[in-house]
Length: 496
Ligand code: ADP
Image 1 (tube, rainbow, N blue to C red):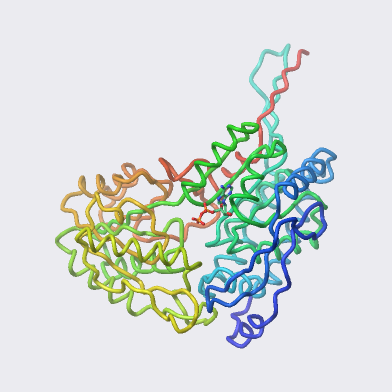
Image 2 (cartoon, rainbow, N blue to C red):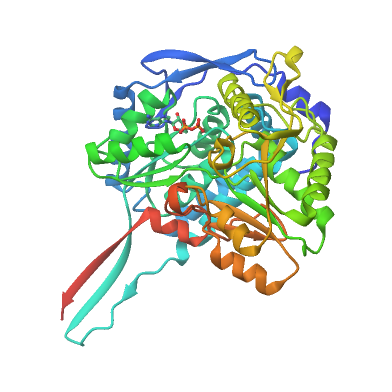
């Protein structure tokens, strides 16, 4: 896509948004519960209303997904036919990329410069990746005596429910929807209340691309009603989720209370970004430390939210990170120059500010930021904030803020750096900055995290898996490994 102009964006951003509906069995229908307003994080205005799916609506969606799976209208197609549809969908996402990005930004407040790449851009790439992968997945023949034939098939699991969050709805949605559809499953998607619009638009494009009715359903509404009904459904075989630890725990309970559906969780982190004094480029390390936590206002699962700095360079690095933070443009997410957009909701903003107040009470020092800003816009914004003197027992060290708040802690030895890095219940991502190859490998080995970045932070593409260890979750999105969640192994043992 050619780089859009500011006036292209403004034209799309002023379009009225029709009241949103549910997609059940290929039909756009109203929800049984009262629709809820969608508020703009940019200025607090009401953008539209979102359908609220009742438990009964959810049952109709899961039943349609089950019926579609069972009659083979998608699961029974030749792989090449599914591949063609998913490629068409990727092309449609590209064709509507700006439209999708602007709609998503109006809904969730991510800065458009990031949304353009991370949302439609990566969603299209993800659909292409799994479209290409789907006819390269083979079964196996077991090594048996010649009197018997052992075949290991890879079968689709059936109905996949995907419950996704608000920070990158299209990107994270595609990480789950694309491999699930590619393997022949039917899907029921439940987007987050504050970021449903771009995924509903994606569903329109999926129908246009030729995904058959019932194969891809979308139910919107509150987590405690719509999400809960989906997670309790006996028609759902596999539940994939990205969101908070508290909801993840509930989903495991719902599974236990219903049909023991498999549950795969991606639950965020408190990811350490570790800068050693021997880093090859300290200026780059400091600048990247700022973008690793402040882009999308810190509303990123893998955000480098804890900066661990070798004591000998602590003051110099903190000053440099603070300079980089202050130089970032905070403002209207629809402005192409903005590097830090809005906070998704007032509740999220209050939570962020609460973390900062507590960090100060705990003895932390605010180096820059610390406050709400742009109140006159009517939206929800917060300064990028750096807190030093954060000790391992502080809440800011241990818990995910999911906002633009960087906790800084010094260390003196490699062993201490590793100990501090691993001293939380999370294990999603990490960063290591060092010029010593052997130290880099030692740290990769010792860090308990799903992804370790070395002399960079973020940017791992779709060819590599993303998944958490410890309480950051289980299972993987992205890469061929994601296919494991959406396929079952089935053995045929044949006497010859
Ligand atoms: P966040 O704190 O990032 O909003 P949540 O875990 O609350 O994370 O939300 C992530 C997704 O989980 C959203 O789509 C939300 O609606 C859904 N959700 C929240 N609570 C529940 C629940 N009890 N059951 C099922 N889904 C839920």
